[in-house]
Image 1 (cartoon, helix red, strand yellow):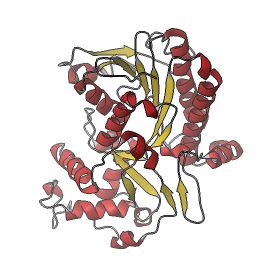
Image 2 (image 1 turned 45 degrees about the vertical axis):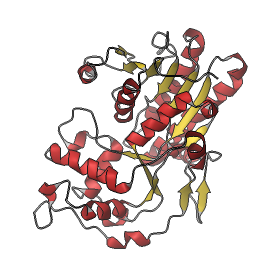
Image 3 (image 1 turned 30 degrees about the horizontal axis):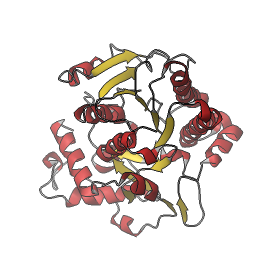
Amino acid sequence: MPVITSGAKVLVTGANGFIAIWLIRTLLEQGYAVRGTVRSLERSSFLVDMFKSHDKFELVAVEDITRDDAFDESVKGVDAIIHAASPVTFDVDDPNELIEPAVNGTVGILKSAVKNGPDVRRIIVIASSASIVRESNGLAVLNERDWNDGAIERVEQLGRSASGLDKYRAAKTLAEKAAWAFYHECQSQLNWDLVVIHPPYVFEPTLAPISTPAELNLSIKVWYYGVVDPQTSDERLLESNKSWVDVRDLVLATAKSLVVPEAGGERMIVKAGSNVWQDWIDVANSLSPSPIPSHAPGTNNALPKGRPEGKHVKHTMELDSSKAQRILALQYRSMDETARDMLADFERRGW
């Protein structure tokens, strides 16, 4: 497939999302034209102001991504699509509140590209390692050949009684399975190829205009309430099998996936490392000078110390990200850099 080079037009769905905003900024800086979709133009007008210095940015409304024809108009005239619109929450009752928009939105944009996107040459889905991870009694090294079928089975069995995490993981897994099924069934007729990117927890300051930590997206909210304003139990600080990536590295990996031919037809795990939450507490307390002086030691708001034995926790699951490294030649930021920038942003916001 031809590479999608600077100057091409890229459609980014869910444009007001945490990852998508960083992605749009990166693409515009690299010389791409970007069309973003949001559910409400009025509620997302800040994006127009944020990118007003770029004449190659436009915003369009797609109110309901579950409709079969939701993206029919927005795919016209674009060279590539990056699908980032999908609900991210563990707080739902009916699993279909997550499954329907995840599956229908993902398959729907592929169908729209077939019908109305003759210029489209590559579609990238920003998925989640949630569709790969699975429970393990011993050490398991998981890669792009693995699927989280266990979450699907538990949601099918338990329905509304399933855990919020399983509902989310099942939705991500079902959406990706449906995307690959459509792609392989229709591949001989397609002008485009498919790439799926799998990040774990994604950290770094948000670019959205929010005023309280409660408005943060799920990943950063968990980080804030674990590392800065402790509302995470001591037991959770030592939970194993967490992985992370800086959003700036994730969006660079996604942008690279537009231009590297070998990315076509691949699932790729993009992660910087493994951690327990205590690791981030230790890093935050080690930074000197502190990027968040309002939480200095000895103050009422001092950063928590947590449970320093976190460094002894053994992981029973590891995500193998060597494929993305081999294809995209990625470089990742350190925990120190990511933590410093996040804490500095919280300080700037008065949190």
